[in-house]
Length: 177
Image 1: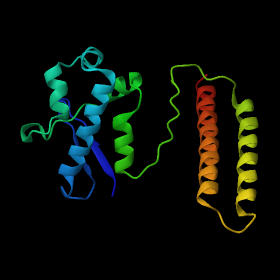
Image 2: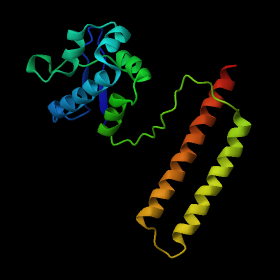
Image 3: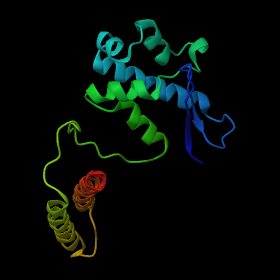
Image 4: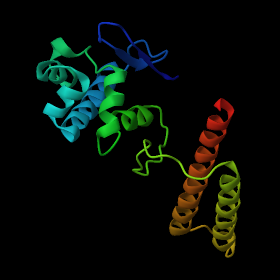
């Protein structure tokens, strides 16, 4: 079962669990509203109004727990604009959490140009993979992977994943050029 997000031109978006027939919809809605509120407060209500073009009252309805606003959610484009200037992607993280997806957030601003290219990505990929294998070798030396060793492996795996993402972005840029 997946999470679906239905966008409507009125801004009354519906978020739910596919195939759940409404099961836990209130919980999902409350969870998303909590994270929407955190996003607005992170950016600041005045700035959020400016960025989204919405009034304070409208933004408030998006995270209100009043029954009359239960079906009102912030449009995805507004979330994207707010998260671009926020300190943390609150709503994106909440959606990922609902689907049991782990995001790797490194705090980098995606507006900054990426340096290097595919060749440097291949070198970085080889280096990261070598570091992962070194950590793995050290971890299995005694036949038991401890919690700390698992954390180090996870950290190296996340770094390797980041290099792959950068490589994918560079390849996409080159295929368009």
